[in-house]
Image (cartoon, helix red, strand yellow):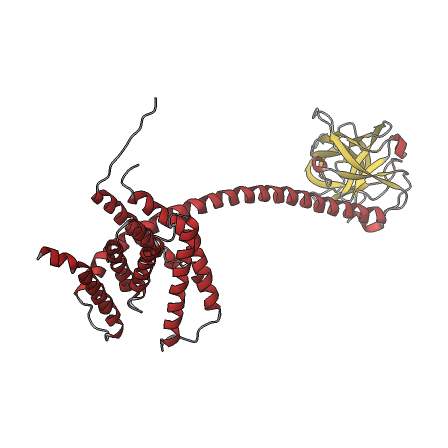
Length: 281
Length: 172
């Protein structure tokens, strides 16, 4: 009996496989309905496994993806930071160039309004001690600069050349106490001497107490000192102090030029300058 | 001094490792392969595994394995029932018929056989798509994809068969 079964084993397997194959093939022709027992078994067994593995795979993918993303973001961040730094530097350079361009344009416009020769110069350094109101410019004897030449820019008078070296010159600003400019009030031509008080203020001296000077009056050069051309703007009256026992009134003037922020200026080579009549306005 | 470690595995241990390997390949096949962007690279990873099993196991064992996993894949496909069963059974039979004439341990043979079986799969699939009324007109490039897929499967075959051969042996 056992021998007989062993002989039939091959045939049994063939029949079994054929049956399985026919069963599987028959599923192609079965109308859609509820799955049979075997199908349900496979789906119910494999489904949770696939779900679990799919979830696990998703988490791994997310972790790997985030890691890669973070690395990319980090690299991108570093690159962008470098680029931003470069662009910021570039932007600062552009802004500087733009501002310089504006200043030079104003200076050029101003230069075109004056007669006579003027030399453009750049401020090299302000007085580093802080005691004096002077600055060094990059034009000197070789450029035809000599002492007492007026120094101005489009905003007004800066000062005069104090001394000169070959390629540099020192400028005494109008805010220095040693500076003195013959000046008048533009409104009513009241005359006085403008000298420096401190880094941001001048004094309009020797104006008698009974003369009419008001806060806001524009002070301009009179042209009578032999140094500064007539009509250049000096400053605006910002304070008047009258003492009944004093012969002169004390008038404080705020220079129109922002002396602490000077970068470019013009040096008049000759004093034969005749600005337009309305340039003081 | 050389230490020699010999491990003798029982038949169940070998079977268990092959089961786990097949299961892991099946999970990869079910979860990752369908997400590949190009049809040409959506390979059938279980076909080489079936060949590897057929090389190591008896004909009946290989056929049972082929029918079982083929049915599971057909079940998940839900269409063209018997496609995977038939292709795996044919692959197992091809290996057993030609096992005495060819050295299937040679990766080149493995690549050729798997590539041929994959191409056969492609032809059957193409025929099915031709007669299937719901299928839209076939793009001529579908052949291109099927051939590339066969080549891919052929290239991957030794990599997938080798673990089966390695775990199928009973000593390390």
